[in-house]
Length: 549
Image 1 (cartoon, one colour):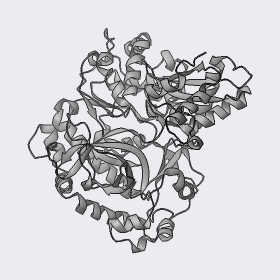
Image 2 (image 1 turned 135 degrees about the vertical axis):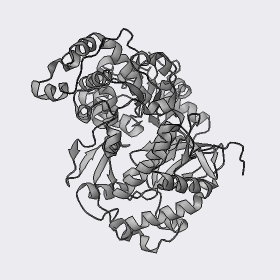
Image 3 (image 1 turned 90 degrees about the horizontal axis):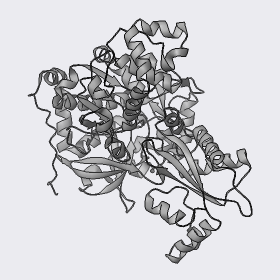
């Protein structure tokens, strides 16, 4: 094995005071984690037994013969790799309130995130799954405090979504994983949060953002944590946009200006009881407003574009720490150093498999640095051999365990801020455009156009012998359809992390010419498809080159 890229977790007993205090209650977890890095196969085999105890005897377990599974290889023989849509019938039964479907353990709630079709994903939470995610998070926090003592000596501004916003047909709460994890923290950790939890459920988005900033501005914030760096940039823009209104509310100790002006007394007064007067700042950049020691967010994949813009927006080169390879489905890799470009696989969590270009599944200890692979997970919540469609790159090892970084979503997605717009959704959105405007284009392609605020751009070839409606109307109709199809796209548009889409008109014959070129290049004519999504500038150029009318 090539051991040239070794990462040291550095979780020993020495360190600053806050680190030693946090570490004192986690010796067993740390010892088990360090052993798992050196003995990943043993750790994953043990984790399989935990998962089998949760799933054997369930309807899914009986259908797949999990009672006969004893080893990791047995699991592969018993259960095929599935994407979310293939597993949806089982998940729908969970949402309907049926017990014992995927696991024999009770399902506590469902986590909502966008799917590859118009329907959102609703993913089950069980106690064993939550404990696995919590343990990984605890290690991440421990290493963060070790590297940044100042982070523990102030308030932690964490931007989350509500843990529950509705209920499934069977009565299960539906909400976000960030809110669930926020509420799951011990009381003494929650004391460090400057924003009351109820603020995260306020609507519309500008009101929620204004209230978040108003509460944060009266505190000594040392860390800012949110999954997407685009959210950090948005808050920076909002500070400048609302400086006059925030100045007035700070001087008066109130929540009555700007987007909060329309709050009723019933909504406002409980919040104002927690507000205090504060001096009005002169410099509204976060580095001047707070003794900010650290920003925690994603750094890999599309997030890199936004991270590059953080120093200017923050007003200083504040360290940015990777929060790990995580999703609503679980926690998969833990970064344990400020300079780590990725995270060590979480061998004590879910069972992890990886599929390379040859299509064959492998285990983590079989991977080599430099490889790019697709992640397949088996979790305590009953997602067995679930294709997450995340592409990871192996960048080294911690012990005998790969350290991986997130590259992007596998397949064709538009994903600037976590919206994950798929080809299926673009296609469905254009059906919505046809229904709204009575026009059916010959072809269309969407891409991300990067700017201060990213936006979707749509190239459209008019119907044969007909004209397109005004491009702004077409873009608005596409936007409305996508917002109805994809909850995360809707949220990013609502919060202005994504700008409104734009459209351009292509010359007649554009897609016929594109297909002809693909056949000339050797593609089977019967298999050539119009590119509904252009994943990079080169592909966009091949579609629209010389074809804009």
